[in-house]
Image 1 (cartoon, rainbow, N blue to C red):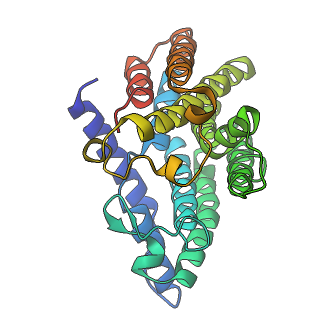
Image 2: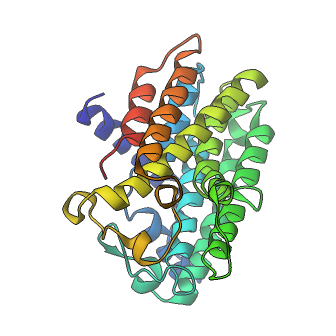
Length: 294
């Protein structure tokens, strides 16, 4: 996979997302401006990319995937908008730009997050025109993985874990990583498989693969917070230790953390390689994502 390939695919995804953004007009204009600002603030567009690559791997056809690619990015974005709020992480900058509440105000940011979550489902439902028989199945996955049994559940456990009286062990940390990080990656890859007509057995394998990717991604995050530098990472390092935050590294140590990232990534790539039609770009993307340096 070349940098150019990745850049081209990212550009195609961005062009798809732009098509579905609401027009900033009418009495709703302030909240729509904040929603669009949040979505357009950049990012790897990883989740829609994983969704599209899995869809292609299973021989998916047509434009049914596009509204779902946009929807998953809107849901991911809304979670960041709310994460950055003063009541949560109190961050004023993300990716070198002002966060939504800092650019507008807290009330607008809360509503923009709400708006993105709701508009994600309005957007996904635009796939109705494609007459795909698996639309409801895909919507059910999207709703569950984004909700209290998915990402919101993980965020709740994460907030509880920060309380002084909480006793965070490896099991609780895995619950947080699985739900807060892996759930939307699972949704992305599973929806790609579902809309392409993959079998239930194949979808289960993809769910396991995405679980491995999400957990390995998060462990690598914890490793980089210990081993990287501000220049490479682009954000302060050592923040987990400074904030007394339990991480995979602080519980299991650096060596085991590195071993587990290797094992999880190898398992994930082996699952992808086991399907009839291989997608080498997807396999390389997963490897690069997990073993990244920033």
